[in-house]
Structure formats: structure tokens, C-alpha cells
Image (cartoon, rainbow, N blue to C red):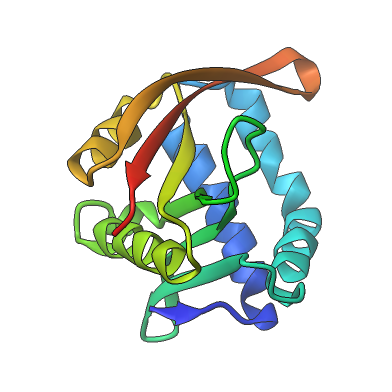
Length: 171
């Protein structure tokens, strides 16, 4: 595990898009997923800004081997209005599909929990697509518990992302 550097942004953006295209196939429209490639430059700029921002309890971490990014996490304070300042959030966790079921996801999830605790958070939340059964099972296996919160994120083209919130107590 290592902290992401600004030069990692293009590889993170590419992994982010590819993972969406594989993990969400059948859950989101194919034309929407196929069109994500057009956003590579914009998404690279987003990740560069996220990584380069002054530290405000927001971090991006990578699992890498032989200069290849296996996956990444993004963490920071909870963005949910109903959460206290003691709640952190796992904003993103993505693993290259070639490395699913090989431990990178578990290592990243553990890194997220440890880093959030070290930043002073006593609990954490995350949001997952309601239809993403594989990810939901992964979170439960790693100690996350679904709570009663649901939200709908609207994307261009009438795409709705129905998401469920999970939470965990940090040690």
C-alpha cells in the first residue's frame, strides 16, 4: 500500500472507468458504461486534484505491485448531513477486475479502516449500488453493516444510481 501521488491520476482514472464498465455491466445501461471512456481526461483531472489537495483528512491510497495499480481507495470525512464529525467515509474502493478474489480488495478495505481510525474517526460509512450484490457481500464479509439510508444519484441520460449506505465502527 502506498499513498497516491499526482502522477498516478491517469492510471487511477483508467482503472476507475474500466472497473465501472465491468462491475456494473447489467446493472447500468451499456451505452452509459461504454461512454465513460470519453470522460478519461476529465476523470484524470478530478483524481489529480483530489490527490493534490491540501490535507483535510482526505486521502487516496493504492495497492500496487510491479508499478501496476491493483486497486485504490479514497477516504475522508463523511459527506452525509446526518453524520457527526466523528464519522469518516470510504468514498471509493475499486480493484482491477483481473485481481478480484486475490486479496487486494480486503487489503484496501483494511487500509481504509486503519487510515480513517488514524485520522480520528470512530465510525465510517460507504455507499454502494443497491443492485451490486457482489460488492454488498464483500462489505458484509469485511464487517460493514447496511443501515436504513438510501439515496438516488441522477446522471445524464436519465440514469439513476440507487445506493444503500453501510457503516462500521472503527477501533
